[in-house]
Image (cartoon, rainbow, N blue to C red; front, side):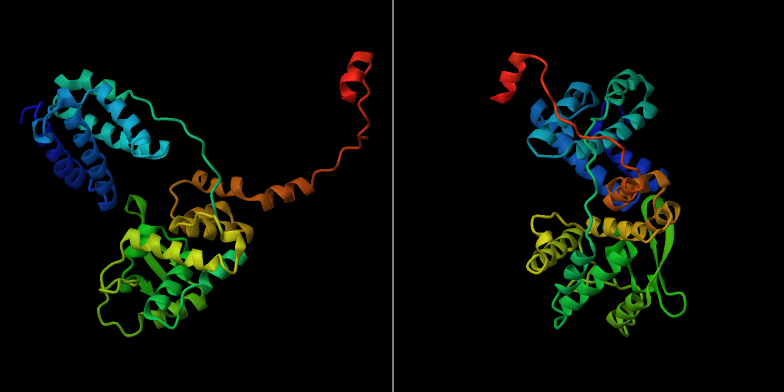
Length: 330
């Protein structure tokens, strides 16, 4: 394989590096695939040649920089998404440098490109009133409504990621004493999350007497696994309906991840330790869980109430100059 054969390197990167050596998750592979699909189309347009004719020389640091600007300006990607694209490109060029060290300098220029800094906004979460309104939104007289209600309740109680929710199989739910669900999260880490009695009872009634333990807990109308887009759509749909009875939901961007944030905040408000919340959510580090502390106004207000008021008098500003006095009077 020639080092300049860009298509062959791309194929070996995905089949050998990601799938075989790293055993990357389907989610990671899909993210990398989308990045390189955009990159090769952009590079082909810039270089005036079809993607199959591109070489490593064509994908230099200048083109990568222009591509990253393109995804932000033309496609409206956030700085965070832009950094994710860059991470995928860096991973590929580390592989190229290893496969053929003669390209080391070329690769190093791309590997040295910095990630873009961005404002880390506070997390969005639902309060108790908003949660009740959202759970009441699905029409439980219909099959889809019962499915959506069960899904929303499970999501809000367990804090599962969107990918974990749609990947749940009937065999992953354990009923009886110590009812819980099992899932494989980020980094292929398996964890178990306990279920409240009411949640376990509702999920058990929803699953019913299904004989196929491999079937999805929350299937589509066709019996297939829900797509991520379908999950986001049903959350938006029920949030819109819930906003009719809960005005605070109007204009609030609620996604499946917002439900996960809401679970974390609920645990935090009930005094659950950060380390336990990290285990509950499947965070690799307790530091990740600290974003919820930054977003929690209750904790900050409680801390503020414990600070003694300073014994000061407001007083009044009096200018010591006639000109300043005139200006102040205007």
